[in-house]
Length: 124
Ligand SMILES: [Cu+2]
Image (cartoon, rainbow, N blue to C red; front, side, top):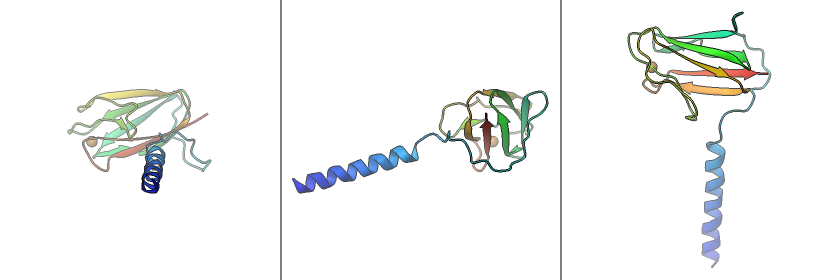
């Protein structure tokens, strides 16, 4: 009986750890002085160039449309690390856009190229 309780509590710890690790990264970032890349038009452009997102990190206001455009000859995509949003494969010159209507920190990657990562920080 004691053995079973130990095993059960071990499972519980594991479950809590898994839940903590898979929680979406949607918490507002701490208020650090970061350059704001927001254009006057309200849209923000990110280029996918030389196998990198440029700029790699943008800070925008809620409601901003972010537009990614592939400037490379290779295909890229844009996928949230939590899988909640993303694009299909973007070939040269193709774009994907997304309106961020909730504040938070959004991490994304290109699933084809390890190290192609970016962040959109959405502030109120
Ligand atoms: Cu890529």
